[in-house]
Length: 298
Image 1 (cartoon, rainbow, N blue to C red):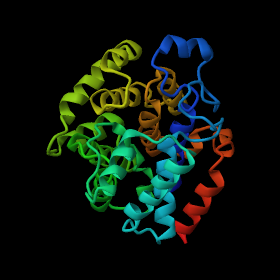
Image 2 (image 1 turned 45 degrees about the vertical axis):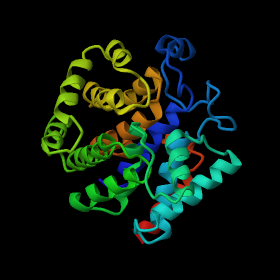
Image 3 (image 1 turned 180 degrees about the horizontal axis):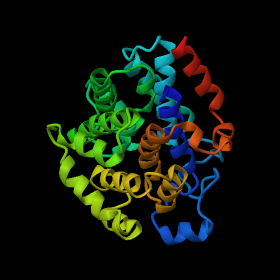
């Protein structure tokens, strides 16, 4: 697998989620998309003004900012905190992307002279990790970078641990492991706060009736629901990468964070070519993504 195989599908997962993002009623989404979600759509909620089909949510925007930072600095992660702050202050002022609680809280801490992240427990902080696969071909530095990029904005130890879990899992899948094996092995590592084995068990159970169990777990941003739902989607649709991202978007809630992570896993399993060429061509940021990847490959 190439960096493109990991990164592009992660962006697909976010862009496909834009239409129904933060609509929390799956039946309402089913009425809006009776044939499922197979194409990018304009936002159907009020949270992303100015966005349209092919754009990212704010989480995809943050992931793109990380990719750009890596490309600008020859693959070095060292400037990410500075680049992230510049990005966050810009979108706070120009309102070109949703200004979420973790971003707001982290900037507030910095303004008060405290270099510490927000206390957010959202999966979103961990969901930005796909660009790191462009610069780390070994799992040890990949895990370290995944944890650091997450801890920049999210102080909840479970979210930081989740970044490690998904980095390990996606790396293992890219090396040829199936999801069940990769998740089991990644859950085996000792995490300070993440109940990885327990949540993996929840995910296995949830995959039997995804809509019912996902709704019960909670479709919101919090990691306690988002982590097992993401795993359940992957296990349920392991051999159906397009259906996996569509099913995630159809669930609603914070489908963007789940989509970024699910896309990473599906890309590791199947590669970017398993998805519609239109999904690549219709990404508004595809030129920026390609340019960043070319610089990182040179």
